[in-house]
Image (cartoon, rainbow, N blue to C red; front, top):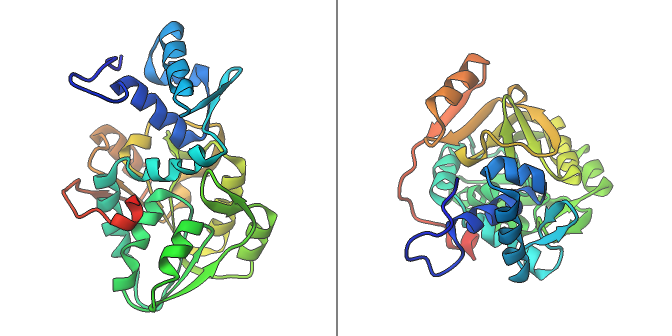
Length: 274
């Protein structure tokens, strides 16, 4: 079990912070899934969820727990960007090495893609396709980048444009490489809780010559409601050295081109953290 309190902690308990991180990453999760993931009693989970809801961090509706759709939910982008920072820096260092000047690349709405966007201006002339408002705002300022922003219905929780307009606009494009992430890896498949996000990611996958999945090791061994893709659908899967040797060996045996980034102290892009 996760300990209730981190010695000397003055904020959330370690366990409650872990529960909040998981709900924020998933967007929506069943209480039963939380109980299974954290190996907790129902009474302890109810106390934690009540405390988090009282602080305005989550909403509990029946047997589901969700992030909020108001300004608090919008801040979840910043919250998620502060998770696994060193892992994401290592992962995106490898990803940036796959990009050549003149490429047309696509970045999904994930916070890992936001970290990658911080590395693009030094590569040279690029065309960047994205449905992320935050990434569009950032890379649109660069003289080296030709930005193609995908429209659609704006979702403040993910700071992204989704829906039919977004999906249709992708079909008129051809992308050299797609860089994307997801919220959960279970077995040899990628999952995500949000159906609209899956549709947008799938549309980008369909129009990309090469697909790169960037996913930190925390996301392995958990699941979400909706199947996104098989890991073999990606040309490269990049994760960090926190991945167990057992899981890594299983992926390689399945024919997955796995790249492992060392977790190291690197300078954190301030624009991502802001």
